[in-house]
Length: 64
Picture 1 (cartoon, one colour):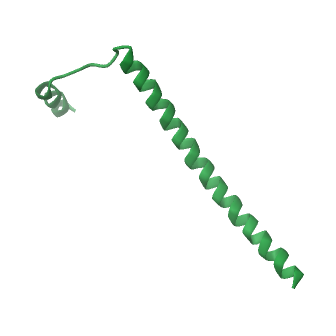
Picture 2: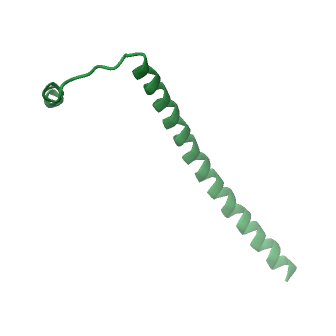
Picture 3: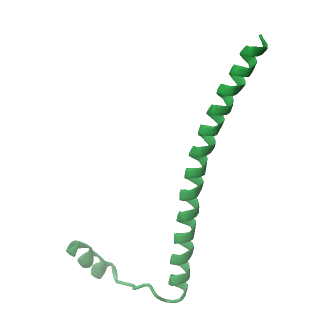
């Protein structure tokens, strides 16, 4: 009976470890996104973005 509990705990630990690894990857991606977003806002606040009218934007978009 005790051996079954140890085996069950071992399987649960392995499952939890896998979940933690997946969470780490997700958190890493979230942090990278947050950093890129913050840098973009800082660039915007410094006036480094370009503005276009709707018509000019659509014209430029068609060139892509």
